[in-house]
Picture 1 (cartoon, one colour):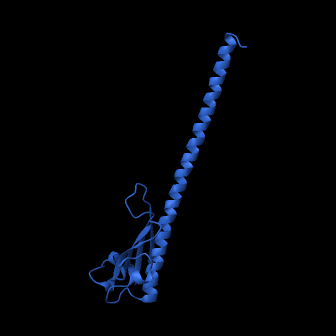
Picture 2 (cartoon, one colour):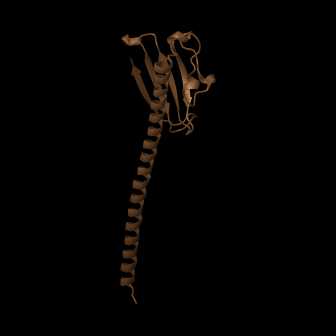
Length: 151
């Protein structure tokens, strides 16, 4: 059994050990929490990029295969690309011969805003700009990625 002075030293030593374990636990928790936030950001960025990439492919397919942009009449983007609602297609420069603006919504909650400009901006015949988003609604951590194609 410990007596007097030895009891105080043992108590002090146990408090010191307990505080060291607590400090190490807090440091490990901080590292894990930071890594989780970083991996969430990477996931959101990846969703936004893939949404933009898929929407670029959609616009390229409609323009190069169906040749619907630059023609009279409303382009049938919703028939050629999954996730496009005909109500999402908007006019561009007051007529369809100059291009189109439309939104592509994906089943995973991501979406992309597409602008197809056929006015010859910068010496190119077609200029496609896409903004891909990891989520379509209002979110605190909404991420977007942009892609442009000129040809």
